Image (cartoon, rainbow, N blue to C red; front, side, top):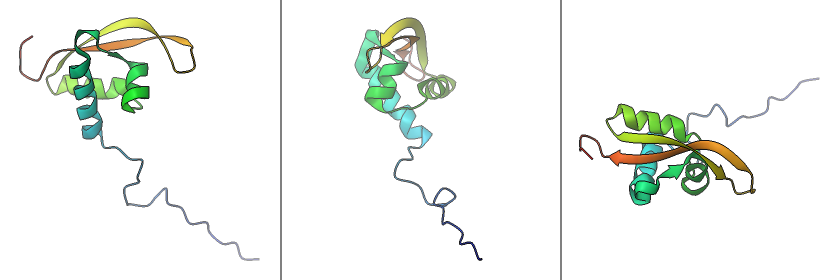
Length: 99
């Protein structure tokens, strides 16, 4: 009996429609934080409203690029109504610009 190999798109070199490059994610977070002002946005808000799966990683990358982003620990309720202790990020200044 000969087994047929299943074709897999997981190893395909083509970009998938659900892929979002890190630089696009960083730009989306930066824009969202600029619009949020001093209120900032929580990890949950960035996941649910801006569609960023790992906001902490992208925020760290923005910091490494020179953006001053504060972290404030808070309790935020997710879409299911469950409270979670999470980070709220506040953009204090853009790259190379003092607050």
